[in-house]
Image 1 (cartoon, protein in one colour):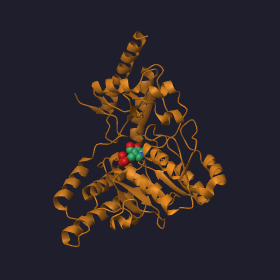
Image 2 (image 1 turned 60 degrees about the horizontal axis):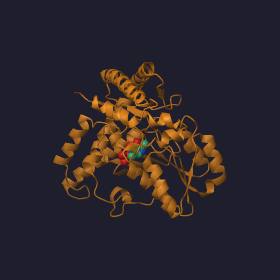
Image 3 (image 1 turned 180 degrees about the vertical axis):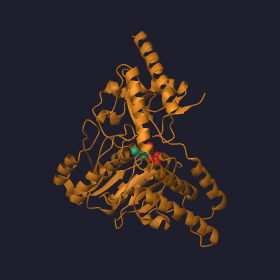
Image 4 (image 1 turned 135 degrees about the vertical axis):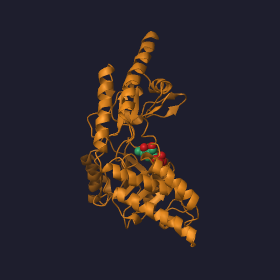
Length: 388
Ligand code: PLP
C-alpha cells in the first residue's frame, strides 16, 4: 500500500538534493570548521555558503543569523536571551495559540518571577494589532518581549506580523516571531519590517530535523544560552552540525526557487479543492479558521462528534497519515488548546484533525484522501450511533 502523507506541518520529506549535499558534507567536509587547516576551512566555507542561502530566503544579512538545533532552540535563545539581557523588564507578552515551544517556555519562566500576559485572539485565531497597541500603551514600559507566531501550526492562520512588529517598535518593545511554519512556505523579507527576532526550522521546508536558525537584528543585545565557545559569534557555543546546516542551506535555496514559481497558488488551489470536496461529502464537517488568511498548505477539519484519535488510527490503517493538534495524555487526545482558544466548541475541537500538504503533494494523493476520509468518518459515525 502506498502511504499518503498529509502530515507536512509535522515534518516534510527531505529533498533529494538536501540528502545528497548532507552526505557529501559528511564524506568530504567532515573536519571541524573551527580548525585553521585546509580541511577545517572547507567545512567553514560550507557553513558560510549555507548561511548566505538562508539569509537570502528571509531577506537579512548573513551575519544576522545564528544556526541552532531547531525551532525550539531558536525560540529559547530568543526569549531567554532577551529576558536576561533586559533584567529591568520582567513581562512577556504571548498568546495561548502559540506552539508549545513558546507556550510551555513562557509557563516555565513564570515561577522565576516573569509575568506572562496572554493576549487574546479574535474568533479567527488572529491577534489584532489594536489589541496589542492598547496593551502596550498601559504596560509597554515593563515588557521585555512580545512573541507571536507568524502562522499557526494547527490551522495555518496567519498573524499580521508586520503590523504587530510595528506596534511594538512604536512602544519601544522588542518583537520575536515564531516563523517555523512560515519560512520556506511564504515569501519573507524581514529587513524592512520591525521584527527583531525570527525563529525558523529546516525540517518544515524539506530540510533535515535538528537544525534551525534565529534571525537577530543587527545591534540587538542577546544573552547566549549555550555557553562553551566562540561559535556562531559566541551566541551558540558548540561545534556546528555542519551537515545539518548544509542541508538547511540547500533546503532554503530550493524553497526560494519554488516560491518564485506559481507553486504557492497551485498548492492553495489543491488544498481548497480538498476542503471543498470533504465538506460536500461529509455532513456537518467544518474547517477551523476558514474565514481567516491561512497558509496554503494547512487544513484543520472537524468531524463532530467523533474523536480525533479514532479518526487518525483508522486513516492510518487505510494508508493516510495525518495528525491532530493535540497532546496525547493517558491514552486519549485532549482537545487542542489552540482550537479552544479560538472559541471552537469542545465537541468540534475533539473531532478535529489536521491535513497538511507540502510542495510535493500530488493531485492523486488529494484524490485518494477525498475517498478515504469520508469512508472513515462514515464508518466511525455508524459505530458511534450503534454504541448509543
Ligand atoms: N513552532 C512551530 C509553529 C512549530 O510548528 C514547531 C514544530 O512543529 C516548532 C516551533 C518547533 O520546531 P522544532 O521541531 O524545529 O524544534
